[in-house]
Length: 335
Image 1 (cartoon, rainbow, N blue to C red):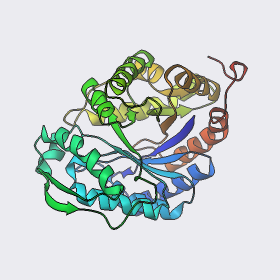
Image 2 (cartoon, helix red, strand yellow):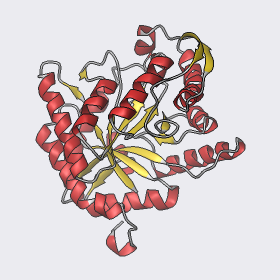
Image 3 (cartoon, rainbow, N blue to C red):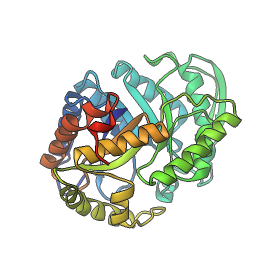
C-alpha cells in the first residue's frame, strides 16, 4: 500500500502567507524524505482562511522535490475552463517530470459555482464532459469541443504531458450517485475522509458493480483519504486530534453543503488515529478487505502548529510507511 500526505495549504488571514507557504514546502520536502508516495493539495475559492490555490502551488512544490508525486484531492474542475485546465495540467506534468495525479470533483458549495457563473446542475454535466475531453487532448487527438463553458473547433494541444495519455484522473465523491458516475467514466474513485468500514465496503461494491456493467476493468488504483494522528498510546492520539477535528468541522458548518459529524464516533470508526501498531493494522485491513491501494493522510489541521505537523510526518514516515509498503504479517500488527 502507498501512503501519501495531504498538505493543509490554508492559513489564518492575520498570519504571514509567505511563512505559511514556507511551512507547506518544508512538509513536502519532509514527506519526500519520509517515503510518502504523493503530497496532495485541496481546492476552494472564497474560503474564510487564506487558501493557497493548488495549481500554482503544485508547480512550486514540483520544483522543490524530485521523487514524490504531486496530487490534487480534489480540484474543482467544473469551475474552470476545460481547455485552460488541460493546458495547465499538461504544464504541471512537464514541470514535475511526470509526477502529477489529478483528483477532480464537482464541489459542494453554491457560493463557488455562483461566483464562476456555473449553474448548480451544470457542474455535474461539466464533470461528465471534462473527463473524456481532457483524456482526448492529452492523447494528442484533435476534436471539436463545445459546452456551457464555450466552444472551440479542432481543439488540440501542442504541449503534451510527460505521462503517456496524461496524468491519472481520479474522481473524489461521497454520494452514491457520484460514485456511480466515477465508475461510468472509468475513473478511480477517490474515497473521501468520511465513511466507516461497512460504509466504504458497500460503496466499493456498488462502484465495482457499475464498472462491470460498463465493461471497465476492476484492476485499477483504489485511493482513499483519511484524517490521521499517531502517538505512543491510543488515548494520546485521540487527545491530540480531537481539538483539531472539533475546530475544523465546526468551521465547515458555516459552509453551504457541509454536514456536522459526531467527532468521537468519527475518530474511532473513520479516521486513522492511534498507535503505529493500530494504524498499521487498520490500513492492512482496508488493503486486504477492500483492495485499497493508496491512503492520503491529513496530518496537519487549520490552526495547528508547524512543529506538530512535522513531527507527525516524521513519525508516520518512520513507524508506518515502511510497514505498509511491504506485505504485513499478522504477527506484526495488533488489532
